Image 1: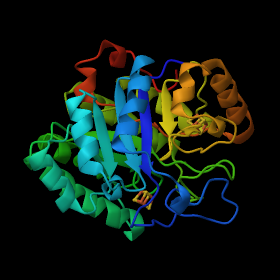
Image 2: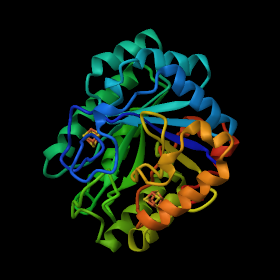
Image 3: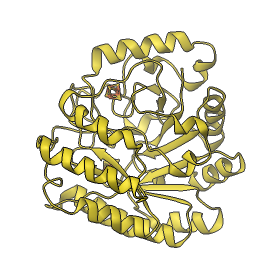
Image 4: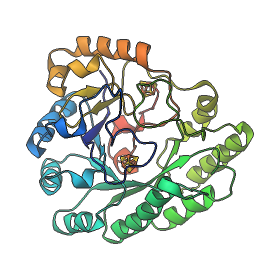
Length: 324
Ligand code: SF4
Ligand code: SF4
């Protein structure tokens, strides 16, 4: 494998329970263990897994949930990651911000990301975005080095003229924006979303926007995505994206089980844990192939958080492409 980035799902618990999120809920027909039955990995066990991933070339850990702030040993985890020179970002909604602020003051957090979308009609995403935006400004004030707003573009918010303004506003405050695209499930195995009807359809409008964001990136605005993303995205919203070998990201569940990807829990790969990568890499690759063939219908989402902070430091990151 050629794992560059991992996505570590440290807990499936999330107090927000957004309507279209299936990660934080047990639902009828779910192929995954019930949320309460997971034996959560401890910080030491996560570190052991990260060491294995690093030995395979992984340079960056995206730590998400559910809501990572409810992970019981969060302070210990941050400290262990820092002490071992691990590079990471936490993806949070910004809930329980007090706990994050205290961790930053007492231990120091290297990277934090939160969803900030432009939501014309409010709802769950609007609520999450408002919490996220306030939270990110506070984290920046507290001097977290890598602060990122993850912004999902969809059919409704690309129609209004606020996207470029949002990028400028964050950039002026030293906060990076990571552009992602609204995805829809392509089979019952997709567990991050149910049909929203908001996938991007207005191709011309979208292409124009991609061109403008690319120009902003070239002008030095703080945008995480590689420049190529804005060219590739135009094709991806029409034809979909399909990842293939050698896989560059690896996603892991709260108990150390390997997932097919960020949005597919998977079937065959779930027979393996991170430790198995050491001796059973070829078997695991075959399991990936099988899951992708049977369960995946493609996606449009740039499914890893890239870090400018890391890109400055790691040559490997500079050549990283989502679709390798
Ligand atoms: S989408 Fe994120 S914030 Fe919303 S319920 Fe799911 S994990 Fe929580
Ligand atoms: S294309 Fe890759 S990342 Fe996208 S849903 Fe399929 S397996 Fe997951």
